[in-house]
Picture 1: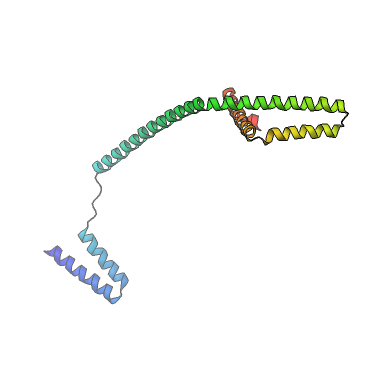
Picture 2: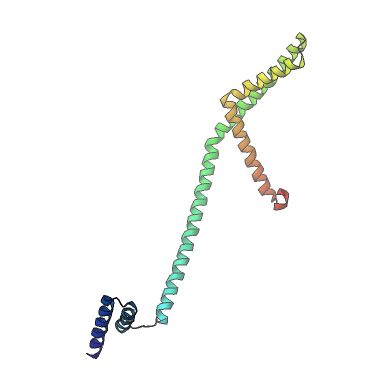
Length: 174
């Protein structure tokens, strides 16, 4: 009963000091009431050990999940790459065929215009103008523009792959 009397009197001192506006005395009274109600108990070593084991187990589980996720992503990426190559190969071959035929058409046109211009006695500017017209007609075709972009992408990919295969170091970029 003595403890209940202490708690009751401490509680009354705290409330009276708080209502009177005496903050420091109210805080001191609250501290004594709190210490009487909730005594400090040290954390047991067994609890600490169980907690650390649970954290270590969860970290290991997270590492295993991350490893499985990386493997799944790598596998899915590989399958996607194979599918992209398989389905894109026909388009790439068709685009290259169109580009080569367009290039041959351009070259034949330039040769014919040059030969016809030479026979007609045209000057250098006329020849350059004909070449410019043929080149602009070649580039203006949307299929050719897409093919050129695809070929540039393939060339860039080949360059990066070659550099990785050769194991280029950082000094080559300086």
